[in-house]
Image (cartoon, rainbow, N blue to C red; front, side):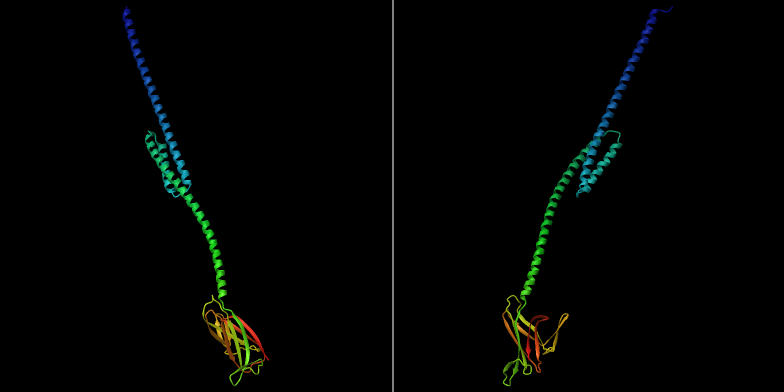
Length: 292
């Protein structure tokens, strides 16, 4: 028969071993649970940091997009920096580990962004000022152009007035027939049969703004049968031609000059005679007289 004491000792030993195993199991389970919590916490922390960094990058991209849309001269540089942000966002999306290395890059990019945006804002202000100045200049130039056009018109009118005023006036054009006596004396007559010479006279009026110097006038005498008397020479003036009886040149010094020329002839016909005085091809005076 077995000893009860020995049985109690064996039972206690078994219980002790089981207790130790139970305690070990509980410790192991607790450790596994703690490690899981730590891992979960680390993963949660990592995801939160990644989202925060991604949010910062998205804000950077949005800021660059807005600045690029303003289309300033810095657009190319802004696009380059925006592309760097997009590339870093792609890299962050693919990453599985620590995102701490991205934080320093984001901070550097944020600093760069602030600098570029400040420069872009200053450039916009300068462009705004230049636009206002340009618009003001355009207005001033437009007004100056209108004023110059008015001046040009006034100058043209003044030039025409001066040109018109500078033309010489021919006054008191007269013609009479004379009989030449043997003594050399000329006696005025109105009979065609007695006339030996026609005396044509006119006055060049004083004009202080006219150009001084020699002035040539062409005198045309036409009888009642439409014949040109005298030299019957022809002078061309561009497309125009003039047949004249004689020409006379006077020295003009801006003072009144009296001109008198004789046109000798014979067999003068009865009727009305027409005398025309030309300055080149421009008719400047005319008169007529009759012989009976």
